[in-house]
Image 1: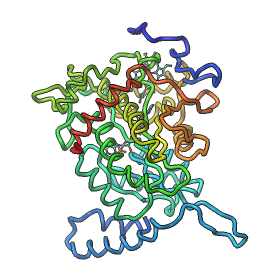
Image 2: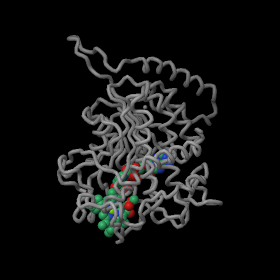
Image 3: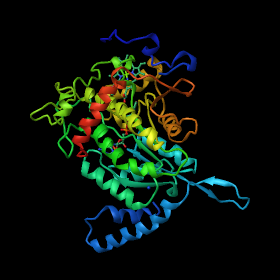
Image 4: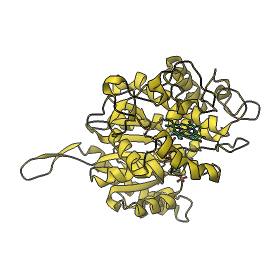
Length: 396
Ligand code: NDP
Ligand code: PMR
């Protein structure tokens, strides 16, 4: 394996926390589901009925938005928090589902599971034992800007407050020989993992801003493999955005490259590049909006959750060997349940309010502020990713 000698330290090899913090590193609305369906599937015969249902939903909401975060609920006058409202993209499996479960179980959160496959998400929630009153499934396909805009529209109509947004969904295409494209003609990994989330976050920023919850947060899931200051980040193909000529060209793969750096298509690299964009975007949000809005912007590496659907397109041999390799050799393995608790912590732990942080966990599952690679913390690159992305999603 080619290891880059630059910007390397022994700690970085295993993504260790700085010495003083160190441990050992291891590596929806007030309407029912059926009402919601009526809102979503506008292709059904009775459109006027749907519009009526929408108006009904609007009314329900107006009440919800004015609910104060702190309400007097007990006869003794004890103040209790209302339920937090969190959107988690890609909550139909893996980390997203485990996080939804962890948060719902506390009884303190209502989870909006923003998923592309409505039925799969509904089944996943049921089999994870998440009770009905604690979640709502809403349709979101991040590989279509129209779908992202429709989701945002539906969410706003729901009248729910937005306290935390978790950009979690992702696809990984390590064996793809040729690029595939989003509905808007953009390479699928970056189009979905980064640009879909970029548009979603930008469109929902005002809702987060208006939240009266004690701590409002925007979390974008990152990864160790996008960080070249780690051993994992040095497994080829390495993330590298280059001068972003491909991104500036729209990742069309037709007259320009499908890769951010303008190079030949490589599915694994496209995923890692998308994660770099995720981590840069979180920091750019922090620089532009933290002070003005009080929103906490954060990213994280939840550990190596080697059993998730992320590896569905990998060869069978990889899928068989990857979990034991991570468990016994790199010791970077983390169960889906544990990873869900970690992300749930970033959503709800009152001590994790610092903004602009990339969280990781040590072996004892204690969180620490980790260091991003040089590229994943490059201020100029973050601004450039932001500016090009704004154009690509139609916001500039
Ligand atoms: P999974 O494949 O289990 O979950 C990914 C989720 O994203 C699924 O719910 C999937 O939906 C959803 N999704 C994919 N494409 C779209 C789309 N176009 N629109 C809406 N949703 C979509 O993988 P993980 O749980 O492992 O991944 C979750 C996050 O964790 C990702 O951001 C990943 O980069 C990150 N991560 C994962 C690590 C790991 O080791 N597994 C390590 C570090 C970070 P569907 O169920 O319909 O396929
Ligand atoms: Mg990697 C400390 C060592 C470590 C850790 C924490 C990971 C995490 N990996 C490590 C080391 C290695 N990996 C080494 C030494 C090798 C070469 C044998 C190796 C290989 C490897 C492959 C082929 N690892 C992989 C792949 C993938 O296809 C995964 C990937 O890159 O997905 C983008 C992957 C991962 N290793 C990880 C993690 C967390 C992943 C996947 C998840 C991700 O970034 O989302």
